[in-house]
Length: 612
Image 1 (cartoon, rainbow, N blue to C red):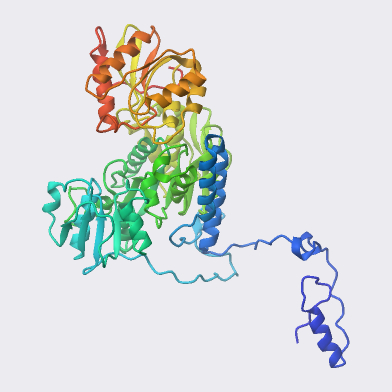
Image 2: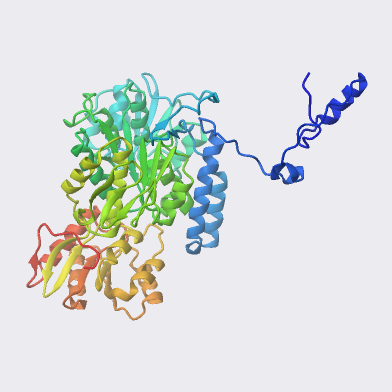
């Protein structure tokens, strides 16, 4: 017979047990040995806090993952509240309240005392079982699959789907590319559909198409799963029998530079790897490389999937759980696509749901997402002295206090220069260290890294004025990092702001502006912010979209500059209102600067840096 102690005020069964004892004439049980009650026992029942077990379940249940994400999103939203209208704040609050990951969480991994990770629970305690979750499905012969969009990633998707024997219907608001007709199999181009055909089992969408698109909204309403190319690649790799480590880089800015550094480090360590994703090479082709004759190119099988992912790609890849993922920063961008800052941050947070999560905690938004991450190991990155478990800088050296490699490399060996590129280098190093790459390989890879174009690159000099191309600064956060590298700047800005605010940017750099020349669709928004926060700075708006606009812009900026100044193209906006890409915009700027009378062209210019 189980005896229930009357000394335990939590147990409401005491009265019933005592009554049964009295009925059979037995004495009452003696009082239990006294002990100091816990605070949660002495409080009235309604006020007792929920007690957290000493050991969490090995598997995170979906509600726990959702609650963790909502906490991080709430922190991000609070940081950005001063930039939101009341309507945006209300929409953000509603989004956070309703937020849920659409796929099951992977196992939570626990740290061993030596710093490794394991799926095993503590000794002597059984693993708590979780309800079985069906594996994500892959298309097979006989399925009807809709491919939405047929651009750079769309063609590899159609090629793969047709090769499985599935019937593929392609929808696009653009004419079909010639390559589509050359794909063997059951492929039908259906134009700009507004709803999926009857019998559709799956929709694979190009990442840039938002969930509010009528076709995707109709598919979701009909209960048809909608995924992106990255999600398809992830599922294929997981089902391959020998899945690889995925290393994911995301953030508002710095993704491409960091991913390039990561690729260089992994190659220095002897891995066969080519960076993929938002950097250019479709992830699906990277996963199939060396294993599928339907993919184009001659790349070998990849040892590691090193991937740059945008918020769009992460939104459509809810199942991805990388070996390690990093969030570099979170600032206003693509709000027109996501609808709110919290939705944008939620997409970025998917990168931190794997085994190891890293984030640059100098950025408040990234720090909030790291704090809410369900990863088994969270590694902070900072531009200052690192504490135990973090990566940072000590005595002008990159230092690892998280994975046991200690000193990695001198700060002055990092290219491009600048404080933000130091943390980018630490992020790349952390991802590589998380899968066992040595500190020596990290140092070798960073030394060998060559920065890409249009990232704060010197393109010309004239009469003591230097001309820098940072066309890759396609949002205010990136433009801020670029502008802060110089003491006095004539700023060339404008394009598509994508819903982002520029007031904070102008407030922070107004005192170093010698003049501003604006171009592009949202030039009036920038002009208004400059009028409010930097009214004494001369501003010129150059309208138009023809080829001569950039020449006029550069000529005007040159007339505002004095010896020692920098003329900087850091648009804070996207380029597609005027140019085919940010690279085309940067090329136009470089050509215009080099065509100025007396200008000296710098063909392979050095990147700018702090103090310049």
